Image (cartoon, rainbow, N blue to C red; front, side, top):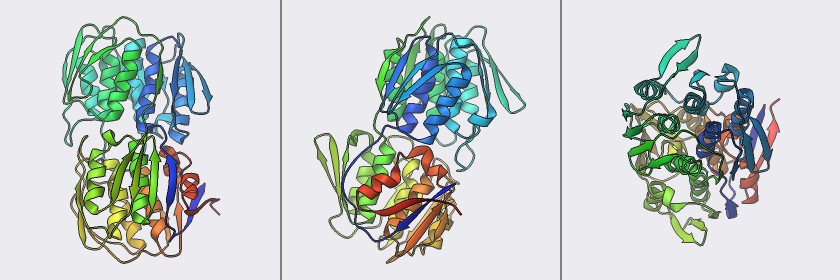
Length: 421
């Protein structure tokens, strides 16, 4: 097992390219199962979750070839329909094979998903939507067993306790592409990653409209074909680097960043005092003056993303004044607070809100990552802390960030990967 060792106190500056979006690529790879033809997916990030999804595709019988940032999938007439526990339990997005398997094979056996420990994330909306399309769902020995002799379209409302579900929208949309008749998804997620998936499905021959809204309409077709597609840039990776520029008083240019996908993050960082400018094909983020405390509430897109909550909290720990960070998507997603507190942060948790009182400086310490975005938050804190910070359990970080220590090193950070003793 690896850890990251960070010597804090270095100002970051330079140019870095934003990798492809993990949360877009995973369902797109799953969608390749809807066709027997070859599909080529480009701008694929080199992260652990991609390796897991490739293993799942191969387990189902698809032929998968990877060359750098391109993955070619040739499903052929694959016969298997079971996604095993040992793979699905490590990554929540594995549940995305459920919709394609139902659509193509009319049967699926998928283990309940795993992933980061950030509070309850039930899959009831996935099952509710599929049942509304005529799919028979049972739970047997930890597996979702789904049968659909004939799938029909229908009106499906995907309202959950904390808003629309990205993965449920993806699953229902993929299943509906080959169902009989029209499917209307109300209160659908409209995140850029959902739109990217819809655009790929349209390239495959699916009939989808409304994908940029909360009402998606799908007309079922008999057959889909292979397609080529380049995955959108990762808005969360871009946002993490933006916070890195702010917390180290730096100046970073993000190549291939999509400002139109990041309006809420840009707005809050500008409110804090960061200087953000658009450049051709890039976004320049520069510390220009003392930052101000801000209040942040996570919400479904286009609101402030829950996947940036931990990172923005790290920034507020060293911003003079009192900030309030409220989590409306996953109210229990605050496990990074205890680790930030070990570094000298002053944070009080009140229900689903964290009250952050900025301190003059953090001090390096050994810390333990609890999930993917908490790992990024601890890394950011380590960049500005006095002394050495060891971030343990970075396998979480490797699930979603491509070569992150190399990217930060290129920008001037003193950071290295070491084996745990």
